[in-house]
Length: 159
Image 1 (cartoon, helix red, strand yellow):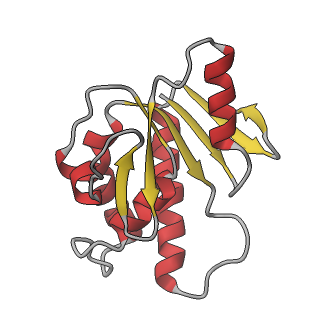
Image 2 (cartoon, one colour):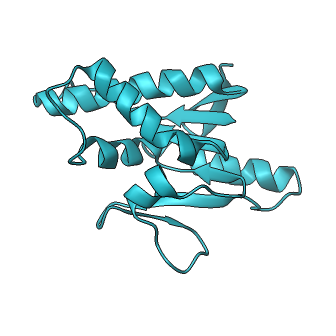
């Protein structure tokens, strides 16, 4: 799996598409995107949308995929009723990691915004969300074959 991290609008998806074209492979991998308006997750070119619960708990994809906006999926799960926000950040991280395992199993590329940079949120829940995303990124980076950080559309290989 290849993990690509970077700030919002830094060219993570565009870089992936350019890489696929340079390899003469086309866009074979399907793209998991989040529709922020209704919280549903869908795979591009598939007629019916999948809910976040189906992606996290039920659906085991049989083809390699690129998971775009991983941080948004974490936010959907973080705000889910099954998360006890009285738990420690470590407990929430472990719980979310276990829920995401089926989804991550076939991911070949994971694109995730860096949400830990910038102004520290006033809300404790937002601070915890930032920390959980960072911890999950660290877990992904340990498992990844390659890790890239995107800045201004330029990928830098960090693993």
